[in-house]
Length: 226
Image (cartoon, rainbow, N blue to C red; front, top):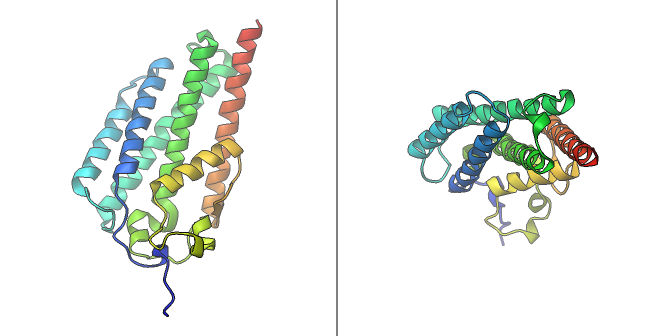
């Protein structure tokens, strides 16, 4: 009997874009809330840019993601870059406001501060999930066409193929899980980074997560104790 090749090592139909698209809509909603809470100007700019890029990607590539077109790759990376810049700016404004006592952060109640910090933190998780998803093994289309047999992230299903479905291959939800667990445990959990860029990116995400959680909680406790 011939050995069954795992889906992540052979050409497949590719994954649908809708899980990522739905998560991006949640991210945009969070960014609008954060921009309003932190008085970021112009608060509408990045959500509009991200929404336009998302609609363009959905219009140009609405089905399964298996087309390795250069313009689709550029659009995808541009979108991720825009999301990273937007949330990085919001995170810096929040951290700077806490550290210096600058308004509007200084005037926030503990509940508002926790909600704003939580929104920035969750947006950060989504942004890094998009980064991992777009860069691992060349991106979704390259993974569908099995262009790379040495992945940047080693998932448990890759090390124990007998315990995984025969059609399993990493999709956006898997990368969202990696980003979430890395942001909560401050280290890899069950999925290991295999390349240097993956290790450095996970390290940077953990650092941002630690800073946000520590400063937001410390500031909230300080307000309650005064």
